[in-house]
Amino acid sequence: RNRLSTLPQAHLAQCKVLELSQNKLTGIIVVPAAPMLDTLSLAFNQIQGAEGLEQCERLTVLLLHNNRLRTVPEGVIALRRLVTLDVQNNEISMLPPELGLMGTLTRISAEGNPMRSIRPEVLRGGVQKLKKYLCERLPPGAAEAYEPGSAPADDLFPLVREANATGHLELAPFGLDLSPASVWSSLVSGMQDTVSVVDLSRCKLASLDGLAQQLPGLVSLKANDNRLSALPDDLCYLRSLQELELTLNHLTSPLWRRVETQGDLLPSLRRIDLSSNQLSSLPGLLSRCPQLYEIRAGVNRITSIDNIIPEGAALHSLRVLDLQDNQISELPPLQECTPNLQTLVLRNNSITAVPPLWGVWDSLTSLVLAGNPLRGLRLNIIDQGTVAIKRYL
Image 1 (cartoon, rainbow, N blue to C red):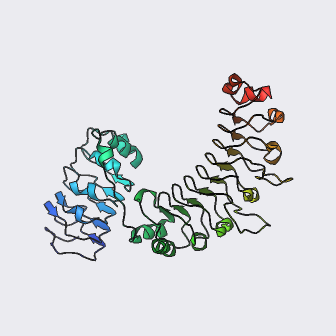
Image 2: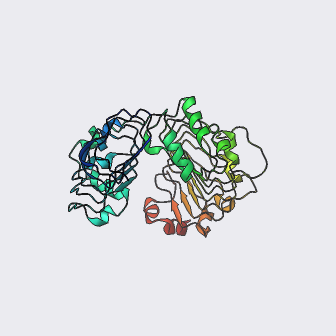
């Protein structure tokens, strides 16, 4: 709230937040070089354009609302870490379709502009809907030619700061390389124990060491599409963890190697997804997760599921079991150890026979058996679905 009409062209080497809203800035401004800048606010001026934004390579928040912009500044597309873009209440007639390719961009506000080509419901329908619309308007080949780049892995401060404020850490869109031990240590040590939702997918991780100790209140953990081959044992003792996703890794059996033999593990866990790994068996320790509702372990090398639940025990909470695309040949009496199961997916295994008692398994409402060398159970019956299969059995 001053009367600045121009911007000084000083080199702002250490500046991280630049607040210039509600001034008298007019015309086309030149943003000063600020390599460490995280947040830039130029709202409530009379700006018609902005040059030099590409020099602010670490910018995550750009506020340009309530100005006189006719186009989104070209430099915005070069901001590989941009999370928030606000261009509301300007004179913009169209948005650059390249915004749809910016993986880090999770907030776009563009209402109050004379954009006839974008319906109001698309503008108000959320960022994913808007980005999908923009991507559909890219010229042929533009998506393949776009190079999103990677956020500097040695500068995690803005991401950790936001995680500590919101309780959520989502790194999947940023293309980070967290494989160096120093980078991983910096990330883990910087987080407060109030962070409860973490997505570390596509971060080239080979280890999750230290995470459970730093975040004992973790509720959701996703680490898909990484390089994990094993899990730290202390992950088993996260008492609040409800969701665990570890797809597209290199996990082998056993998942955990030195775990206490008595008592419940992961007592709040509701859902675990271990699909697309190299498991030869399901982790027997899952039988000690009393709240487990859904297990997905498709596309592995599982040959037997006899050890999923010890003899005489039962997992009453389990409703969904997905074991498609494995190498299972024989089936244990699952109706005894998972009596309330509703969905069982066994597509593309080596199963030759199905227990006849499954025909009177009352809770089972979805049974998928296609792609198995079943004897006696004809393909036309399998194609008719679960009711027909159970009637046959």
